[in-house]
Length: 187
Image (cartoon, rainbow, N blue to C red; front, top):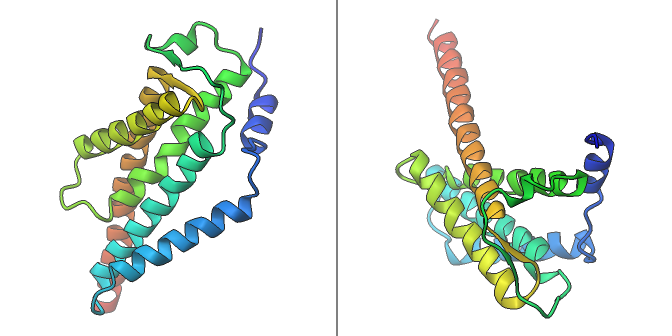
């Protein structure tokens, strides 16, 4: 059986939790506004970047929780898969699409977190990814709104590592552009 990339793309694009996107976006903006109000400070550019990063982290993680836990139907049974890489043994188009979504879903979390962390190290990305993913999986198990899966944790952490690498790359690009602009001004 071949991999149907068209199906995977359609699955990812049309993944619907049953909740209007406007409601999720509205709640996210509200949460970000509350956080910015609570963490308001004097006019400082670096503080503003940190505030914006906190808001993006909280808002995005809220969206992730909505799509992975809150807006899923309850199954009334606790389901779990504790064997690492079990999904690779029965990999079909639906599981491959979910695998890709699990990786992609966590890329922005660590990317946004990079603006907040004092020490930008890969271990921070791994720790953040593990803790947030484990919390989601544990919530799914307790609330019976999904499957606690070790594979999901692995794929989420992989997404965090990719997000961290994207953050480092973007920092290098921004620094390079800044230095070039500064050299042109000096000339």
